[in-house]
Structure formats: structure tokens, C-alpha cells
Amino acid sequence: MERETNKQEGSGSSVYKMDLSSFQLSEEQKFLFDLKGYLVITGVFTEEETTAMREQVYKLTHEPGTLSAHERTVPGGASEVVLSNPAVKAALNAFIGPDVRLDNQFVVWREQGMGDAQGPHQGGPERNPHFHYHVADAQIYSALTRMVVELNPVGKQDGGTVFLPGSHKSNFRIPASIKTKREDMYEPYFDSYECPAGSLVFFSENTCHAGPVWNNPDHARAAILFAFNHIGCRWHRHHNVAPEVIERLGPEARWYFRDIWPWDNNDKSGQFGGRNVVQVHADGSLTTSP
Ligand SMILES: O=C(O)CCC(=O)C(=O)O
Picture 1 (cartoon, rainbow, N blue to C red):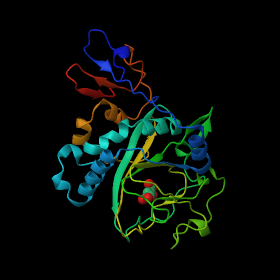
Picture 2: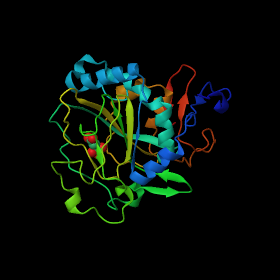
Picture 3: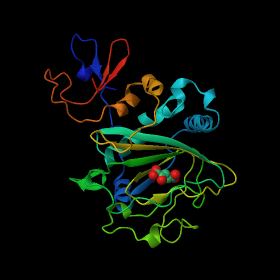
Picture 4: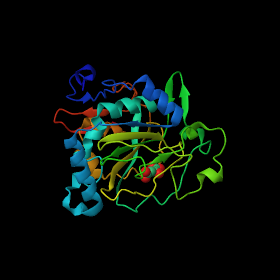
């Protein structure tokens, strides 16, 4: 955090400066995300962080009353670490650019036999260009990008999310013969992944994907699914994060909840350089999008 560089003299307040540069994705990781429309990054969170988040997701789905108000939705409580993780920030910077916001979150706890009711969705030129997948000047603009935090191990055929690789930029609509919900979600078209607990899976929402029925009898699929977008764009009507949760977040996590605009024409004083920021006051309180 580099508050000093943006300090406003005499105001006792400073502008929080988000640092997205502490880690960089490799050339191979960016290439694979662009090629296939999804990317798995294994072993991102420590065992301690993963266990705490798994417990939070269990309580959220089974006994929410046992959680304090500030942890009753993600990313409050144990899951706040996700938004400051260097790999998360590096990937969002690589896939959306430096002006990111959190668009939506939900959690899943799927025992054997439970699965997403939806069949394969998205992929191909189905959406308005503002929400589609683009690359310009070596920057990916993936617009609505989903990030899954897997909190239990996932085996190849366990029922992690499956993807139709390359479909985020296919030029034709996906034929119904491929897109139809099927018994076997894996063969021959869809890719699945395996990963240890504490891993991340990123995908463009334009990549045709599905959440198949969970098959593993030994443990549930426990996951947090975030969606991110550019600061000027919103897809979901609700981010589903409780106000009491946002109120308790530190400046780094609060940054993802800036209002939905990239430029302020009325910032005549130039106090914030026209930018959409988080202000940190002398007493530690925060103002989002002042
Ligand atoms: O549940 C899953 O694994 C997939 C989630 C999904 O379909 C989505 O984020 O649109």
C-alpha cells in the first residue's frame, strides 16, 4: 500500500493506491487463457487460508446464524484474503486490466449427486460486444470474468466446472448438438480440470461452460465463485454482498466495491485526478468513490 504518494496535504486523508504489480502471470498462462478461455492456477492459498474459507462456506450454506454479520457473505471474514492475493490481482490485471470491480459472488457446497441446474451456457457471439471477449494492444479485455476458488481437491471427473475450449471467441453459435445438457459432460467436447484445495480457476463467461453433477463421494465440492468486470461495466443486478460485510472490509477489498464509473468530469479540484478511488481517512475510516 502506497498511501504517501497520493497524500492530500492537510486533509488528513489519502487515496488508497491499489498495487496490482506484485506478481505477474507467465506468458504461458496468458497464452492459455486467451487460447482456451479458461485457466487453472493451482496451490494459491495456504492450508490455513483454505481451511478457514472452507469452514466459512460450510457455515454459509448450512448454519449461517453461527457467523457474525460481517462474515455472512463472501468476501467478508476468512474470504477477504482472496481479494489481496497477488495471483488474483495479477490475473485480473491480465484479463480485465487495472480498472476492475467485483460484479457478483456466490458459494457452492455440492455433495455427491448435486449439480448446477443449468446445462452448458454462453460461448460464441451471443452477447453484446461490451460484454464480449476482446484483445487489443496485447491487453485482454475479458469483461465478465468468473473466478472459482476451489476449497476441496477436484479430480478430473469429479464435477468441477467444464469448458468448451476456445468457445469464448468462436465465430459461430454453438450447435445445439454440442450445447445440449448431456449425461456425460466430459467427452468428447468439454475440458475438465484437476486441482488441489486452495486453487483458482478463471474463465471468461463467454466460454461455454457448465457445473456438472458432483461425483466424488469422499468430499463435497466447496467453492466460492466470484465474477469481476471492468469498472465501467456491470452485468449482474446484484453483487450479493451484504452492506455490513462491505462496511468492515479493509481498503484493499473495499477497492473492488467502487461505484460503476471510470471517470469523474465534476472533479474540478482535481483532488482525485478524475479517478474512481477509495479514500482513507486519518481515523482509518474509508470513503468509496468520494
Ligand atoms: O457451478 C459451476 O461450476 C459453474 C458456474 C457457472 O455456470 C457460472 O458461473 O456461470
